[in-house]
Image (cartoon, rainbow, N blue to C red; front, side, top):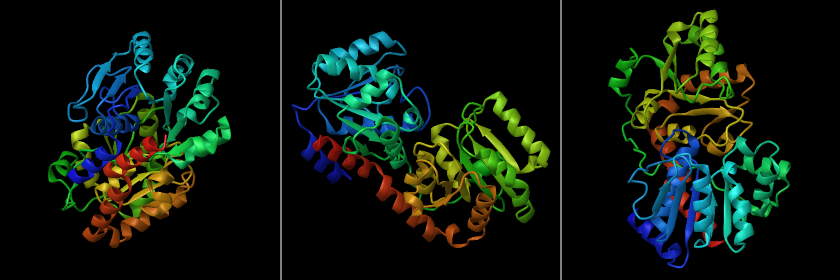
Length: 383
């Protein structure tokens, strides 16, 4: 790995090339975009001598991701954030805009210093609908728009009429410090925490549960649990993630109506350092989403050797390499989801260590940090 980093530095590190990355959050909140931002910060910091990392909402950062670059966090002060980016633009060759919601910066910087190359990152649903004038113009004025999936690229072309050559697919990655296991054993301390044992068949989802974002498909899985529990009485659906009161009440009503209280476990929020242990707990990871920009949780689960089922109508297709790494289903079809779950639980092949090791290897080769850095290298070199 050291040789790989040295090779990248030789190719890309240029004392005259200055990069600024402006983004919303990476260290003060949790989610897929935050994980992407951490990986990008780590990549920029590893490859450039003159990088500026600027956050609208972060106040501090984690040292392991950022050792060499200059960091400035504005803790929600929007005016100071924008003014600072404008100032930095006069000393910047490449400005990376981490979210369309701060794209007014693109508008201003291109007006004041047209020579600055601007890269805008599009993660998913935030660009899947009609945008206001400033956001639309910001996409048009960007030199490159990076999308984390082909689904988002197609949406941008369809809705915002951008030139296809301007849009580059830049997939998400695993965290640079993701701990890859070798034995794939279910952690006994986590089993004990939820009063489970190795005889339980465990289905896992990792997602927020919000009344405003009920598109992850966890309710569909809850609804088919009565059928699954008849075949596998010891089956458990473990749902990891925060939930709001309204959504939790809705889900509790579904559980009560179907008399499956013993088959559903809500863990609530789980810290990052425990997430990999929860993946290892699972026999199967399922999230039949309909509005996923990419789904880092899919590649995290597969990196732990866990077979994955995802929806086939959104960015999840990219995370599963169009079905090469996992199983894609119609997320609106509960029978299809049920049959896919039943098939994988029944399969002995997908539960053995040979399968798990190969799945882990395939995911690392496709979405590991080395691939992410190499892709970023190519994008910058071709800008």
